[in-house]
Image (cartoon, rainbow over all chains, first blue to last red; front, side):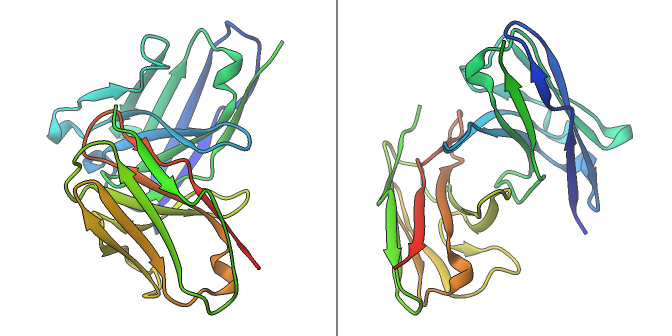
Length: 117
Length: 107
């Protein structure tokens, strides 16, 4: 059974950093495209960034609001997908989900990031 | 960026009703339109991919249609467990963008 488990969320001050992890199981992680999607409290879904599989070039893309501050990476040996978030702003407060596949076939349960002084 | 305009933003319906949600893209996205269901406090769930393909395990009362810029999502016979928010999403061009969502509740 496919499973994605996010961790690493928490409370951080503006300007701070946080690293989220997404551990995958139940499918061939190395073949999967992986994305981060966030949802601010009471708001809709916003795509954050994506990394393709190495077989598809390992291309990384970001949404404009996070480009230059956030970094997506993967460790296929550990079936883990990461989101390094630097220079955090209050508007980055959200539940962060990892999702797999071109069509976001499966999602983790999410991890809450709160940016507040 | 491709803007996704979803309507209505909220909808009240009764069990057994036919429910329709529309999504319009600001430019041609071919068939690359997906629909997700999100229940309160839960992660989204893929229901329909590439405009009209039913994801494995999703009940057949859910369906999608359309291509180009205009898409429709339908629940043929609303069930109580369908109460949720629904989002369309285009995966044709980066950045990937979502509609603003439709909140469906029981009348």
